[in-house]
Length: 598
Image (cartoon, rainbow, N blue to C red; front, side):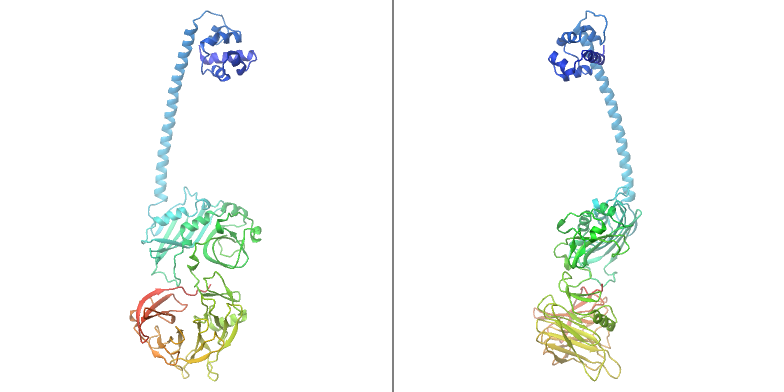
């Protein structure tokens, strides 16, 4: 007897009677599930049900237990059922044994696969993911088998690379330049990333350069002393690897690439990017969701527009430059306070663009347009033989009540605004009507709302010397009085001029015997008298090759602190201290941001 054979026989008989499992179960007072188990050979009908089942199916009990029609026999039902049960138990035992063998085989196979995978990954990691990134070339591959999605992973793995880099002991890091190329699916192909290292005091230590392509990561390190840039590096929370990586994850890169007509796909990061009024962008500020758009919809402003100002921006284009036929600007929030950490703008600065001259008093967040025409700007720059204004030939304060002013043209013409750029007045200065030379040195500054000063100087020529004079105003520029400067009509030409207040000030003159460091004269009575300042420049560090400008005079703790610099040519500055101006003593060397063209 076989339980499966019995089950098939019961099924056959039930169907011959036209009964369902449920109908047969109802006649026997059991569930349809019980009938189903009998027919599948999973169990046998209870001994008390066999006779009733046989009656319903018109067969003999012996035929049910034999699993086929045949001769009706008198049998011991209990023994027959016991035989069937024993056979079922044996079949279950054999089934479990086979199942154990199958499970063991699967386990052994999985163990082998796991071991092979471990050995492969271990080998792969050792080859492509070294524990230390050295200077020079490193074998490296981003993502497993080169599968690295910028949209999903941002800069997470690059952060790990930076942490593995063998370099100096730094505390914080900024990204100063980022250019990443991806494929049509947004997978990383190559990148060029520059970073800046800072210590715990946020002092710049140096730069790191990472170039990645074709499973090769090239790293180069440059210390601060080796760097010859005139820019001052300052730390910004909005330029960290983590912060930029978060913003990259907000860009629907794969969808946007699909909608674009770009041939190549580059992402470029620019913190504090200057954008014009009404420029279309993808506006991700306040964590807004960014949707992919066609370029025509993007240009029509469906992603958002911005007002004129400075922004944290990530740009998607073909990599040929920051301005191409098809550029997508993604604008995001910066961390509060980071607008002051610009690489190319001073807090008070100016900007010449397409024939216009504008001023800012807040690191470029807002711009004040001057009334200079394109012709006046062109004339001025041609006269200066430069693409920038002369150092200290313009002035704007963080205080809106203090006038804005700038020199322009071949003649020393001064434009002044006392109402934050709403209107401008013109003042022309003449050094000496019958003794003309081009006025090549022009200095202007307003100390407060009323008091300001101008200093003008010419070049020197043999036989005629030079001319230099100062002019003071005490009414915001309406009227001016002439002030004599020391060593007029000599080869000691004017370099710079600075008034601390209406009485105290200092002038820097060219020193032929020590061209790197100027002669300094001071006044404590509004320019009526000038006295020579004594100072020892032998203590000044070697990297400060020269000094040419007076940047600031500050009075605190019964002492004067005089800061001298190098104009717009370099960022080194030196601070002197003095109880009186007769003698200045070297105090410290520092750096500061200067005006950078562009």
